[in-house]
Image (cartoon, rainbow, N blue to C red; front, side, top):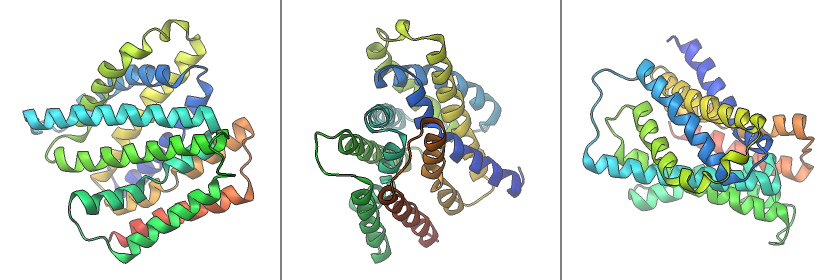
Length: 283
């Protein structure tokens, strides 16, 4: 893969990740059913991509790594569940921006868990993200849907940050696509029993949206991300993935007429700029 193709791949991956909230909103069912259905299609897609992209001499996971991958699967499924709950409660725009807080959690937890020095610029990034979240919230009434949805989204960001740090600590030397397959298989095993009673009642159109979530927003997006990182640097990928909320908000505006307020746009701009400059500082 050339660098130009890798950049196209990472942009497509960011777009697909940004569409997760759109497909979750279009699926007319509960978040638990979305998680279970997405996991079904994600496992099938990742199994296929693992055969196409995985390295032939990849390291086999140890028993400890398998346990950590299983724990990562629980975190991944919980992240999906809370994110789609945020989408259903408050809409795609607020859910996407709330989830975009995960780099701030990553910075704080990385310094705490790995005992790494947190630089002043990273503390500034956390402060800017917090200010952005305050602006995104129309009010602080816990009874309002917007506030409740934002809290679900921030919890989703926290869970994703924990998943990222767990992967950093436990998946070194493993093939990334195969590791993702193991985690998604865990999601399937843990969440499908709860989703199973809901699945027979889904419309054919709902299954279509879940298939798009599992195949494109999970299997293909993750595989594109992994393949592009073999060519471009991680910091470049992080800057591109800062555009994920932009894609999500733009499509929500177009499809659902979720018109963001000026205050929400300002808060979202602060969050995205904080992620952008944090990735630039990571050099």
